[in-house]
Image (cartoon, rainbow, N blue to C red; front, side, top):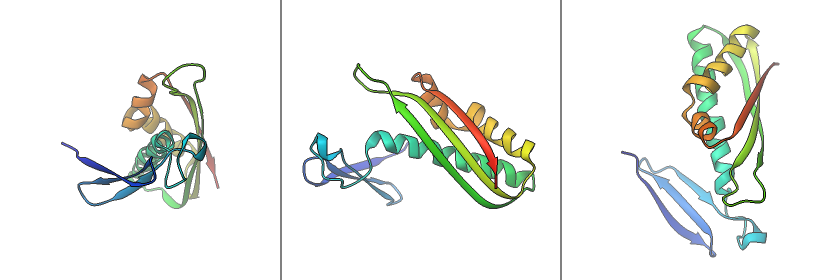
Length: 139
């Protein structure tokens, strides 16, 4: 079982979440929504989770294939639904940029395996209707 504790720390909507290991994350809403930029917006945190989940997968797969990674980054762009509540993620696009002694086909396959098989966050988003696309660029 996973446990998370959340305490309001700042203004009306500034929350701090702590996991069982003591790791903390700050969350807030936008100033337009009454927040004060205390932390990340919760829906943005979902995208951060997508990136972390997939990044771990891709690096792990490439390491098992003895690929030498000297650089790894991800850029995520996403769009939310409009005109209905709640405003779920409509689409998300991930660009993986990987540097080192990397076989391009292996990098593309690692991203595909993450997005289509291993990443639980990607599957959670997909089941909510999010269209997820990705691209791999070698640096």
